[in-house]
Image (tube, rainbow, N blue to C red):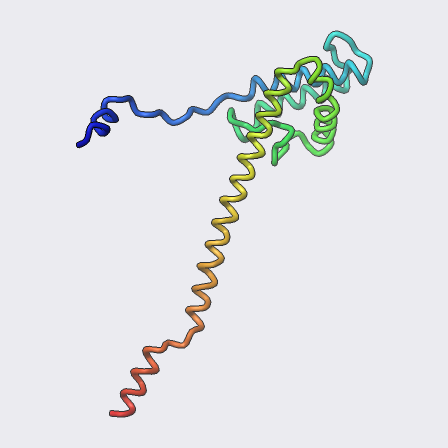
Length: 167
């Protein structure tokens, strides 16, 4: 055992990263974005919402609680499986997209953190797709080689037959 091995045995072992609960941050971000959007487009004031936006926000908050991804959910804007229904999802995405510029002015840190989180989610999605495509390619290659081997004529058996005929 070398010196480095002794030092490594003394040092504490690294713990695997624990999942972070993104749900409260996501809810706060959505709530503020809805407030900024509704104040600008529907004439409300002080973060209050019109009845239409209130109904949509209530639906979104309820569905976030029941998100299939749990506490480590991706950002709702970039989610692959939106859970609000088609109309509500389209309205939600419209509000989130149109409120971005106003959010940058009124809540710059929150907007930047949200953008970084969405970039991280995009990167993770890209890595998942890359890994799955590589696995798919290897499976296809294995299947092709099995098929090619199945259709090849066995060389050893033909040679042994020729030797038997000569005898």
